[in-house]
Amino acid sequence: MTAIRFAALFAAFALLAPLGIAAEIDATVRVGQVVDGDTVVLERPVDGADQVRLVGIQAPKLPLGRPGFPTWPLAAEAKRALEDLTQDRLLTLSFGGRRLDRHGRLLAHLHDERGTWIQGEMLRLGLARVYSFPDNRARIAEMLALEGTARAARRGIWGDPFYALRAPGETHHHIDTFQVIEGAVLEAANVRGRIFLNFGPDWRTDFTVTLDPKTARLFVREGLDPLTLEGRHIRVRGWLAWRNGPQIEATHPEQIEVVER
Image (cartoon, rainbow, N blue to C red; front, side, top):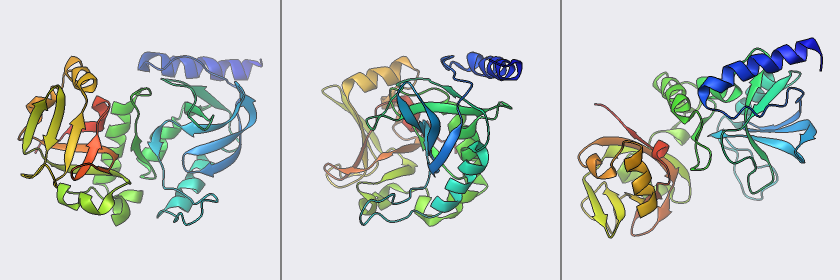
Protein backbone atom coordinates (compact mmCIF):
# COMPACT_ATOMS: atom_id res chain seq x y z
CA MET A 1 0.00 0.00 0.00
CA THR A 2 1.41 3.40 -0.96
CA ALA A 3 1.93 6.12 1.61
CA ILE A 4 -0.87 8.16 0.00
CA ARG A 5 -3.32 5.28 0.21
CA PHE A 6 -2.32 4.55 3.77
CA ALA A 7 -2.90 8.20 4.66
CA ALA A 8 -6.34 8.08 3.02
CA LEU A 9 -7.21 4.92 4.91
CA PHE A 10 -6.05 6.40 8.22
CA ALA A 11 -8.00 9.62 7.63
CA ALA A 12 -11.15 7.69 6.77
CA PHE A 13 -10.79 5.55 9.88
CA ALA A 14 -10.37 8.66 12.04
CA LEU A 15 -13.52 10.18 10.56
CA LEU A 16 -15.65 7.08 10.94
CA ALA A 17 -14.60 5.62 14.27
CA PRO A 18 -16.17 8.33 16.49
CA LEU A 19 -19.43 7.99 14.56
CA GLY A 20 -20.10 4.38 15.48
CA ILE A 21 -19.51 2.94 12.02
CA ALA A 22 -17.61 -0.34 11.91
CA ALA A 23 -14.06 0.29 10.68
CA GLU A 24 -14.17 -2.19 7.81
CA ILE A 25 -12.62 -0.16 5.05
CA ASP A 26 -11.22 -1.00 1.62
CA ALA A 27 -9.06 1.94 0.55
CA THR A 28 -8.67 0.75 -3.04
CA VAL A 29 -12.31 0.81 -4.13
CA ARG A 30 -13.09 2.69 -7.31
CA VAL A 31 -16.41 3.01 -9.13
CA GLY A 32 -16.60 1.60 -12.63
CA GLN A 33 -20.19 2.59 -13.34
CA VAL A 34 -23.03 4.48 -11.67
CA VAL A 35 -26.33 2.63 -12.04
CA ASP A 36 -28.59 5.33 -10.58
CA GLY A 37 -28.58 7.83 -7.74
CA ASP A 38 -27.96 5.26 -5.00
CA THR A 39 -26.21 2.29 -6.64
CA VAL A 40 -22.73 1.90 -8.14
CA VAL A 41 -20.74 -0.88 -9.75
CA LEU A 42 -17.17 -1.31 -8.49
CA GLU A 43 -14.16 -1.79 -10.73
CA ARG A 44 -13.25 -4.84 -8.63
CA PRO A 45 -15.49 -6.95 -6.35
CA VAL A 46 -15.28 -6.70 -2.58
CA ASP A 47 -16.16 -9.86 -0.67
CA GLY A 48 -17.50 -11.29 -3.92
CA ALA A 49 -19.90 -8.37 -4.57
CA ASP A 50 -19.36 -5.85 -7.35
CA GLN A 51 -22.24 -3.48 -6.59
CA VAL A 52 -22.77 -1.09 -3.70
CA ARG A 53 -26.20 0.12 -2.62
CA LEU A 54 -25.61 3.36 -0.72
CA VAL A 55 -27.19 2.36 2.56
CA GLY A 56 -29.59 4.73 4.28
CA ILE A 57 -30.82 6.69 1.27
CA GLN A 58 -33.27 6.33 -1.59
CA ALA A 59 -32.62 8.36 -4.73
CA PRO A 60 -35.13 8.91 -7.56
CA LYS A 61 -35.50 5.69 -9.51
CA LEU A 62 -34.83 4.81 -13.14
CA PRO A 63 -36.68 1.97 -14.93
CA LEU A 64 -33.47 -0.10 -15.38
CA GLY A 65 -35.22 -2.52 -17.68
CA ARG A 66 -38.34 -3.01 -15.56
CA PRO A 67 -41.36 -3.11 -17.90
CA GLY A 68 -43.90 -0.38 -17.17
CA PHE A 69 -41.78 1.20 -14.42
CA PRO A 70 -41.87 5.00 -14.79
CA THR A 71 -38.83 7.21 -14.42
CA TRP A 72 -39.15 9.19 -11.21
CA PRO A 73 -38.65 12.97 -11.42
CA LEU A 74 -34.99 14.06 -11.10
CA ALA A 75 -33.68 10.49 -11.54
CA ALA A 76 -31.23 11.56 -14.25
CA GLU A 77 -30.04 14.49 -12.10
CA ALA A 78 -29.45 12.17 -9.14
CA LYS A 79 -27.44 9.76 -11.27
CA ARG A 80 -25.28 12.58 -12.63
CA ALA A 81 -24.68 13.92 -9.12
CA LEU A 82 -23.51 10.51 -7.91
CA GLU A 83 -21.24 10.22 -10.94
CA ASP A 84 -19.69 13.59 -10.08
CA LEU A 85 -19.18 12.49 -6.47
CA THR A 86 -17.71 9.04 -7.10
CA GLN A 87 -16.16 8.50 -10.50
CA ASP A 88 -12.38 8.80 -10.87
CA ARG A 89 -12.01 8.96 -7.09
CA LEU A 90 -10.54 6.68 -4.46
CA LEU A 91 -13.38 5.66 -2.17
CA THR A 92 -13.67 3.93 1.19
CA LEU A 93 -16.44 1.58 2.23
CA SER A 94 -17.76 1.32 5.78
CA PHE A 95 -20.49 -0.82 7.24
CA GLY A 96 -22.88 0.03 10.05
CA GLY A 97 -25.13 -3.03 9.88
CA ARG A 98 -26.03 -5.84 7.52
CA ARG A 99 -23.43 -6.04 4.76
CA LEU A 100 -25.45 -7.46 1.85
CA ASP A 101 -28.99 -6.96 0.56
CA ARG A 102 -31.16 -9.65 -1.00
CA HIS A 103 -29.72 -8.81 -4.42
CA GLY A 104 -26.16 -9.48 -3.25
CA ARG A 105 -25.18 -5.80 -3.22
CA LEU A 106 -22.94 -4.37 -0.52
CA LEU A 107 -24.82 -2.08 1.88
CA ALA A 108 -22.18 0.50 2.61
CA HIS A 109 -21.40 4.09 3.43
CA LEU A 110 -19.03 5.74 0.95
CA HIS A 111 -16.40 8.40 1.62
CA ASP A 112 -13.97 9.91 -0.86
CA GLU A 113 -10.27 10.55 -0.27
CA ARG A 114 -11.04 13.96 1.26
CA GLY A 115 -13.44 12.44 3.77
CA THR A 116 -16.61 13.62 1.99
CA TRP A 117 -19.53 11.41 2.99
CA ILE A 118 -21.30 10.55 -0.27
CA GLN A 119 -24.69 9.76 1.30
CA GLY A 120 -24.56 13.06 3.15
CA GLU A 121 -23.84 14.97 -0.06
CA MET A 122 -26.74 13.36 -1.92
CA LEU A 123 -29.07 14.32 0.93
CA ARG A 124 -27.62 17.83 1.16
CA LEU A 125 -28.21 18.32 -2.56
CA GLY A 126 -31.82 17.24 -2.16
CA LEU A 127 -31.30 14.31 -4.53
CA ALA A 128 -32.16 11.53 -2.09
CA ARG A 129 -34.28 10.94 1.00
CA VAL A 130 -33.61 8.87 4.10
CA TYR A 131 -34.51 5.20 3.68
CA SER A 132 -33.54 3.20 6.76
CA PHE A 133 -33.88 -0.39 7.94
CA PRO A 134 -33.88 -1.98 11.41
CA ASP A 135 -30.62 -3.83 10.66
CA ASN A 136 -28.82 -0.76 9.24
CA ARG A 137 -29.28 2.28 11.45
CA ALA A 138 -25.84 3.91 11.58
CA ARG A 139 -25.86 7.71 11.14
CA ILE A 140 -29.59 7.91 10.41
CA ALA A 141 -30.04 10.86 12.80
CA GLU A 142 -27.44 12.83 10.81
CA MET A 143 -29.12 11.83 7.58
CA LEU A 144 -32.50 13.03 8.80
CA ALA A 145 -30.99 16.40 9.74
CA LEU A 146 -29.44 16.79 6.28
CA GLU A 147 -32.70 15.79 4.61
CA GLY A 148 -34.61 18.27 6.75
CA THR A 149 -32.34 21.14 5.73
CA ALA A 150 -32.73 20.31 2.04
CA ARG A 151 -36.50 19.95 2.41
CA ALA A 152 -36.82 23.31 4.16
CA ALA A 153 -34.90 24.91 1.28
CA ARG A 154 -37.06 23.03 -1.28
CA ARG A 155 -33.84 21.77 -2.81
CA GLY A 156 -33.86 19.07 -5.46
CA ILE A 157 -36.64 16.52 -4.99
CA TRP A 158 -38.23 18.62 -2.26
CA GLY A 159 -39.38 21.14 -4.83
CA ASP A 160 -41.25 18.45 -6.79
CA PRO A 161 -44.79 17.36 -5.79
CA PHE A 162 -43.87 13.72 -6.45
CA TYR A 163 -41.80 13.69 -3.23
CA ALA A 164 -43.89 16.06 -1.12
CA LEU A 165 -44.69 15.38 2.50
CA ARG A 166 -48.11 13.72 2.56
CA ALA A 167 -50.94 14.53 4.93
CA PRO A 168 -52.62 11.49 6.52
CA GLY A 169 -55.74 12.10 4.44
CA GLU A 170 -53.74 11.77 1.21
CA THR A 171 -52.35 8.33 1.94
CA HIS A 172 -55.23 6.46 0.27
CA HIS A 173 -53.82 7.57 -3.08
CA HIS A 174 -50.31 6.22 -2.49
CA ILE A 175 -50.67 2.58 -1.50
CA ASP A 176 -47.65 0.39 -2.30
CA THR A 177 -45.30 3.37 -2.43
CA PHE A 178 -42.67 4.75 -0.06
CA GLN A 179 -43.87 7.99 1.49
CA VAL A 180 -43.02 10.53 4.19
CA ILE A 181 -46.19 11.49 6.05
CA GLU A 182 -46.70 14.25 8.58
CA GLY A 183 -49.65 14.80 10.88
CA ALA A 184 -51.08 14.66 14.39
CA VAL A 185 -51.70 11.36 16.17
CA LEU A 186 -55.34 11.36 17.21
CA GLU A 187 -55.09 8.23 19.36
CA ALA A 188 -52.37 5.84 20.56
CA ALA A 189 -53.66 2.43 21.63
CA ASN A 190 -52.12 -0.79 22.93
CA VAL A 191 -54.03 -3.86 21.73
CA ARG A 192 -52.49 -7.05 23.17
CA GLY A 193 -49.00 -5.56 22.93
CA ARG A 194 -49.36 -4.15 19.42
CA ILE A 195 -49.36 -0.36 19.23
CA PHE A 196 -51.70 1.53 16.91
CA LEU A 197 -51.14 5.20 16.17
CA ASN A 198 -54.39 6.37 14.60
CA PHE A 199 -54.52 9.60 12.63
CA GLY A 200 -58.29 9.68 12.14
CA PRO A 201 -61.47 8.71 14.00
CA ASP A 202 -62.15 5.54 11.95
CA TRP A 203 -59.39 2.94 12.28
CA ARG A 204 -61.02 0.91 9.51
CA THR A 205 -60.35 3.56 6.86
CA ASP A 206 -57.99 6.23 8.22
CA PHE A 207 -54.21 6.22 8.15
CA THR A 208 -52.53 4.23 10.93
CA VAL A 209 -48.98 3.45 12.05
CA THR A 210 -48.52 0.08 13.77
CA LEU A 211 -45.71 -1.40 15.87
CA ASP A 212 -45.48 -5.05 16.84
CA PRO A 213 -44.71 -5.81 20.51
CA LYS A 214 -40.96 -6.32 19.95
CA THR A 215 -40.67 -3.03 18.07
CA ALA A 216 -42.72 -1.20 20.70
CA ARG A 217 -40.28 -2.40 23.37
CA LEU A 218 -37.35 -1.21 21.24
CA PHE A 219 -38.91 2.26 21.00
CA VAL A 220 -39.34 2.40 24.77
CA ARG A 221 -35.76 1.25 25.41
CA GLU A 222 -34.49 4.01 23.14
CA GLY A 223 -36.48 6.72 24.86
CA LEU A 224 -39.60 7.04 22.72
CA ASP A 225 -42.66 5.41 24.25
CA PRO A 226 -45.09 5.28 21.30
CA LEU A 227 -48.07 5.65 23.63
CA THR A 228 -46.84 9.14 24.53
CA LEU A 229 -47.27 10.21 20.89
CA GLU A 230 -51.02 10.68 21.26
CA GLY A 231 -51.85 14.29 20.43
CA ARG A 232 -48.38 14.99 19.08
CA HIS A 233 -47.35 15.95 15.58
CA ILE A 234 -45.03 13.39 13.99
CA ARG A 235 -43.33 12.63 10.69
CA VAL A 236 -43.28 8.96 9.70
CA ARG A 237 -41.71 7.27 6.68
CA GLY A 238 -42.18 3.87 5.14
CA TRP A 239 -44.06 1.76 2.63
CA LEU A 240 -47.81 2.24 2.61
CA ALA A 241 -49.94 -0.91 2.63
CA TRP A 242 -53.71 -1.34 2.84
CA ARG A 243 -54.74 -3.06 6.07
CA ASN A 244 -58.01 -1.61 7.35
CA GLY A 245 -57.03 1.60 5.61
CA PRO A 246 -53.60 2.98 4.70
CA GLN A 247 -50.95 1.72 7.12
CA ILE A 248 -47.21 1.86 7.75
CA GLU A 249 -45.60 -0.85 9.85
CA ALA A 250 -42.82 0.82 11.86
CA THR A 251 -39.86 -1.43 12.60
CA HIS A 252 -37.32 0.96 14.17
CA PRO A 253 -37.35 4.34 15.93
CA GLU A 254 -35.74 6.33 13.13
CA GLN A 255 -38.90 5.97 11.07
CA ILE A 256 -40.73 8.37 13.38
CA GLU A 257 -39.69 11.95 14.08
CA VAL A 258 -41.51 14.10 16.62
CA VAL A 259 -42.14 17.48 14.98
CA GLU A 260 -42.10 20.45 17.31
CA ARG A 261 -44.73 23.01 16.32
